[in-house]
Length: 345
Image 1 (cartoon, rainbow, N blue to C red):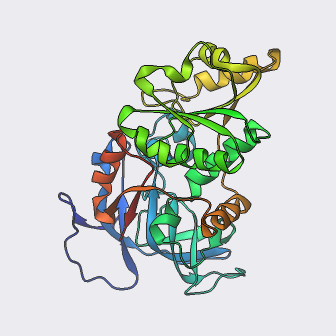
Image 2: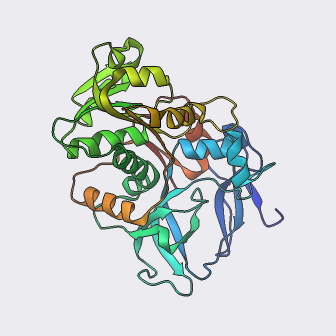
């Protein structure tokens, strides 16, 4: 890393640097671990090759997926991103910003365009993205609102798609409803007319109710899993209910979708419960499935249209400076976040 120069090791604000246009500041990590592995460094600015778009980042979204990659947990993720150390040392996936330059063969984008999308390494002043994973950002949507949308919004949308048809009166339970994905699931489900029950920590119930949930349960009380529950759909984002519990609260022909990896703790795959659900589902009248979301441009386009029309909202809990990425990750890991956390330059 001879082309990287450290500009801060402690505190929140970077030390002033006089660097030319060929460099940029970025959050970086050279080993797996907790928030303490994050550093704020000066590094080379990427150049857009064929099919690529270089974007000056206006805001970057922070989510649990970024935490998994930083921690290298579950261990299976290291097969994709580096066994001993991360191959891409700049974390972050979601971004919104302004196009700086485009590579050969790119159509539909030009310098100065407002865009949002997904690309590895968004916790930086500039990010290099595949043009196929970038969409135009309408006026009226802030960088922060846009950067909070891509991964969490797409995961929420795909979870509902996997759950099957929704309509007026569909009885739905959303666990982990106060987080980034959960906050979008509740809003999207209400757009479909579902009757949404939601579960979250006690101090987050008002926030979840403000998203439009019809009933909000305190997680500690266990009311969402009462004996007389009979949900048509359960979107489980919390990573806690057993397969037996999910089956007990589902209607006879109900559908459960388990989203993402199980919550923290050393694990090879982080998906033991999810895989058990998939294995037993063919033998049941109920449907149990798991979701590992993928980035689809058409999904992001649809979400942006809903946001532009005022039908969907990114709920931002807190905004941190790029040089405060360590503090932002600590805040996320502490479990107090309602909605999304974003970073700005």
